[in-house]
Amino acid sequence: MKRKRSYSRVTRHALSILGKLIRIGRTERGMTAQELADRAGISRTTLYNIEKGAPGPEIGSVFEVAALVGVHLFEPDSRLLSMHDARLKEKLALIPQSVRPAKRKIDDDF
Amino acid sequence: MKRKRSYSRVTRHALSILGKLIRIGRTERGMTAQELADRAGISRTTLYNIEKGAPGPEIGSVFEVAALVGVHLFEPDSRLLSMHDARLKEKLALIPQSVRPAKRKIDDDF
DNA sequence: AATGAATGTCCATTAAAGTGGACATTAGAT
DNA sequence: ATCTAATGTCCACTTTAATGGACATTCATT
Image (tube, rainbow over all chains, first blue to last red; front, side, top):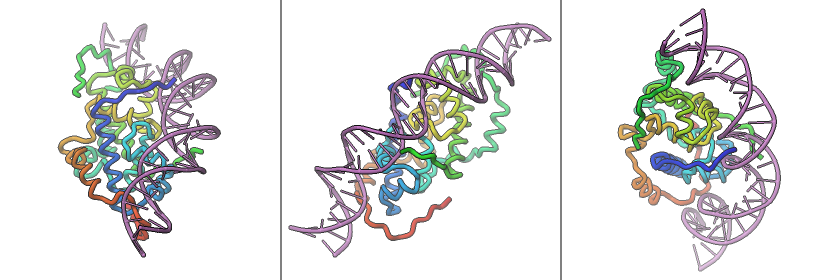
């Protein structure tokens, strides 16, 4: 069964920021919540939750909405886009496909 | 009722990249899929879908996993983090709370 | 080459997200 | 100050994601 999950501070923070960016982007473009929801193919209620920074919505819907209002997480100036799919695929090919025991410590740096 | 959604190319692309970054981050840290899933409080199956770039998973889970393997979407060097919550809140306060008719055209730039 | 663990993938069950209404509240245009 | 549409929020119903198990396959180590 699905369980009640908990989210770290960074996660909640990131969600909050993304939601605000979307809200700002939407109003800047003069779109109503209903319009944006329709364009994204989701309900106004869900968009509301997204702008609120709720952790539940599907990531696909959130990204779709973000793109529609001009919030691109993988912009050229972002370190993320700097690696496009193809390059990442190469990198993945170089890395071991399967991880062994991993006795070494792991640091949750947050 | 919920409908079968469709996702734009940019969205699918972003999801694909994020999934790969997570996969890379995980292997670089020597974590097995099961370990990471446990830490994130999700099932291995869901983590699998996340790494695959599926649009369905909850954004909260994806962000949580990303943070755990060191993929921070809101880094200092990213234009996104440069605006922290507080500043965004200010900006939101300056913007109209409610959007009027919006007869002007909107460009879906992708 | 053998082998044990990690990963890819499918499936039925279950819990949660998504939805459309409905209604109160609020803010913008007149 | 009014009026009207946009937003905030709740809810019951529906659809879908999350899960744990199971099993085949693929690596990494020996």
